[in-house]
Structure formats: C-alpha cells, structure tokens
Length: 217
Ligand code: FES
Image (cartoon, rainbow, N blue to C red; front, side, top):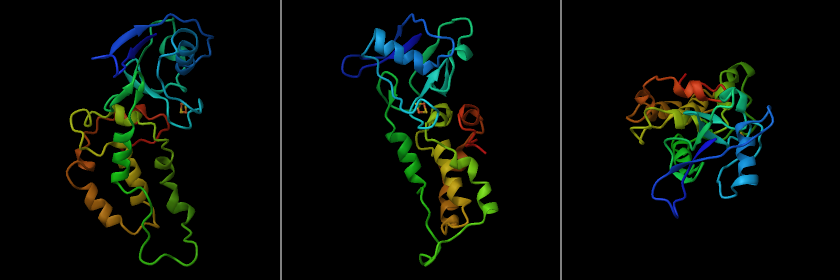
C-alpha cells in the first residue's frame, strides 16, 4: 500500500509511505490499514467505527476515488496484488494522515437548516404523513454523512462557498417533506448564488455515493 502521510506537528508537506503487507483474500482496505497500524506503524492515523458501511466515518480516497474503506474489498481495487494508493478525502482539511476535519462538511449541512419547521402552530396531535408522500424521501434519507460526495465534488474544488452535494441532498429531504412549512423560503435560499444552480452536473457525487443517494438528482 502507498499511504499519504501528514503530521501537521512535524511535516511541512504530505508524503507517501509504502507498506508491504499480506492479508487474507476477503480483506477490505480498512482491514489492511488496521493491520498496518497494529503490526507495522502505530503512528498511522485513520478514522473508523462500525466497519459495516453504516456509520460513515471511514471515507478515504482509494486509487483516486472516494470510498468507504470498510466496504472496499482489496480484491476489487488490487486484483493481482497491485499497489493500492490510500489518501485522505479531498476538499477538506487534513488533520493527520487519513483523517480530515469534518467542520467544513457539517457547516454546509447546517446551512440548509436540516430540521422540520412545521406550518403555523405546532399540531396538538401527531402529524401523520401518508406513506406515499414519504416514498421519495427514502433515497436522500439513506445518507450516512460520510462526505465521499463532498470529496468528489468538482465545484467545491474551486469554490468553497458552494453548498455541495451532501447539503443539497439534505435540503431536498426537507423541501419534499409534506410536514415542512418553509418550502418557499428554502427554495429561495437554494436559488441563490452558491446554491443548487452552481452544480456543474459532473455526476461524480452520484458515482461515488456508497448508499445510492444520488445527491445530484
Ligand atoms: Fe463505519 Fe466504514 S467504519 S462506514
């Protein structure tokens, strides 16, 4: 493996470090990184938790593509034992090695006010939305906030003011919710500069989303 290393306390710039490892055929890229950390180099920084594509904490760049490393089998990216290149996600500040600062990601999500804002007074009884009216929300609700789409976004690469794919998918989740009372206000905000129309339709966010959320759609 070639792993991009960076320690802000000692490095002026990032550099690659190579590790030669043997792992069982069913291993994921995350398994391999953990093995490196446990057996070769305890200083390697990486973030993971569930190891089951649920928590969204292990997104990294593998062979130039943002992926959940717990979901990426080594045999898929290195069928004949080729070198696998692992780097931190793009478009986000690197804290150390493969760990990025998620402040940027969360600031975009917060900007779209990701919570229901009911119409008028709070209802006295539960507001039950019909199943049919919620069906089109299932796709954006599958987002696990891993940041892979933000890493792949070609607009964020050049314009950090853009809301970005994860926040736009989250915005749709509330715009399309029949219980929300701020649809017009939300749409006006998304209509502004740095909003929905700044997307260039490159489709990379759709390609890399590990949950099929299709943020661009
Ligand atoms: Fe939780 Fe990969 S470790 S999604």
